[in-house]
Length: 278
Image (cartoon, rainbow, N blue to C red):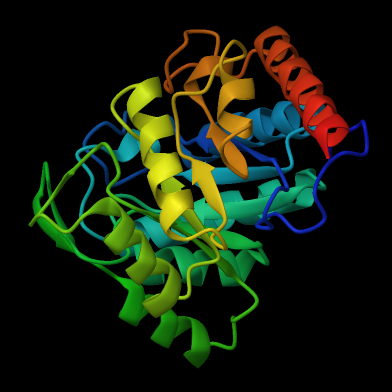
């Protein structure tokens, strides 16, 4: 957890200013990009990334099968198996909260992995409505996710639901505020994630959701850096960070401790400023 004792006890609480660091997995066996390096090497790298993030002070880690593009709709049985093994070893290696995201929209699959490894939350990319993505039309998974979560006795697992993620285009013209309301009210999402095509677009989406649903916990899904994270945290309840703390500045890189430290220092300054305003 955050070394300055500022980490929120409840990850998805209004005003918590939660920082979620991404562990982007290398291509897993069965995916197009898998090069045969073996699951042990993939796991070792993932654990090392998670440890750097945890030691750097993030409040939670989100494990994602980022390297498996082009992603299948739900991830195959091999994805569930490998991510369960990797996730369990990460859970044993860090003390902070852990979440699971399976691309393109493996909602039930992510919940299954998260429950098996005793994680705390999942991220679901298309929770309500429908979108057009690289693989075609993807429909919302809220009903299936809630049904499965109840069936396996995993209602303690929190759901962070994306609302019109930037990697896809909405099918139809339902305003983002209305879609967010569906995810919050109908889908019982614990947090809503907004990610635009630019910093300005992301902030605009966050503000629109916050205006429409003041009680909702809203996270920024991407695009934050040490230079702009303060602007984001002033508007929303937390952020998901990945590329900007990598050595390459891209998600395929590895977490750079110096970049992470600079980012978390900016977070600490912002948290202090916001506390002083209260």
